[in-house]
Image (cartoon, rainbow, N blue to C red; front, side):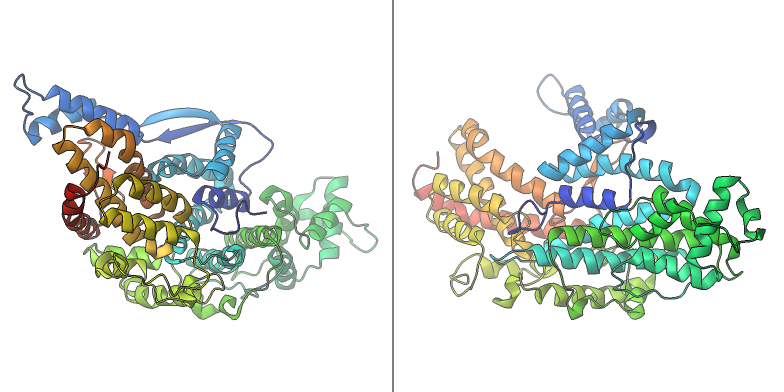
Length: 532
């Protein structure tokens, strides 16, 4: 069951679901070696030390070249760490209840999960698909959260649609990309029991019935013969009970793990036609496992009937991509080279198709209002529509965070600092995983508000009041904005520790809007009541 149906689940919650769908955890608690990059916290500490090192006696800092020379010596290095797999699992479970504090925290954990996936699945030839699904599923969910402006009603159906349709499509897309000349027959895209569908398809392709497969496993119980068992007389051979039970479970709402079902079906690879190799067999099996586990999680959330939007077609697979369409467009807007020209050309249509689907969900606020998408709000100055006015009044079934935002906005323009702070804090907590694209104008106002307060309190020599009252609001908003992808992610050079982003234009535009609004607010707070 979902922890809260009036907002979308957190990224930390979906992260656990994705790990469960991959069947990542087992009963073994083995030591795993990890090669991990230095953490953002360590790099910031080293950068502060570098600044102190180039600080002169008169308080003036040295040049940028001086800083780079020092950071090259102080920059923390990559490290080899050994951790128990259950330690990683416990951390994933913890984050499913609390969420990631920042995108950097997710990036750091991602290194460990990718290493675990590779450790577990490389010998089966499916680790590339598993890693791809892990990374892409979370990226696509961040996009879904950014674009889905939630109304006040339950978001359970919206979340179920994302799992059963978006992630099912993503799984098929990733599998198809690994098998460009695939001869495996197209599966029913809305198959309720994908793993049983895979088993039935495998039997048709190989010409081996499930009954004969069960008999094969019984031969193996008597004496380990491997492929030679297929040459035995199956006429009076009894079936293997365990094998039959595994196949029966493929039509039950219980999560499946790779080691549970794949050894039962793997012997069929001996009879595969030349056009289909064992690698393709394994990849299709793994994709079916992911789809099965997604369906199980959807069922755990409650009854669900997919809409017409959810009918996956082969044509959709051709336009699918591991990278979310809005992320590709972000890169294009910032003149970042996209290696595959066709993907770049398809991105606008893919993004529009995504928006059309989201905006027809029963829990979408777009059913009652014309809300721009996140790219329009970031690049086309559309956020100005939400800075003033009573646009929210006519909304039906509006979420409560909007009312708090309006109260905060009115208090902000009236120069009532503490009242605005109270409403902004409340609105921020209620807006998480609800606001969709509207978080961008909200975030710009929060940052401008905090910046105007800092300037005012600095002039009064009362910086400690800013740290006490206002800094937490700005930090909280910035961490969430970065986590979901409203703001660009900055990556530090491992040697110089200087941050850079692939989205400088997006960053420049948002900072410019924040600065402009902060200057506008200077007058109300200068003439208004005491903000402290």
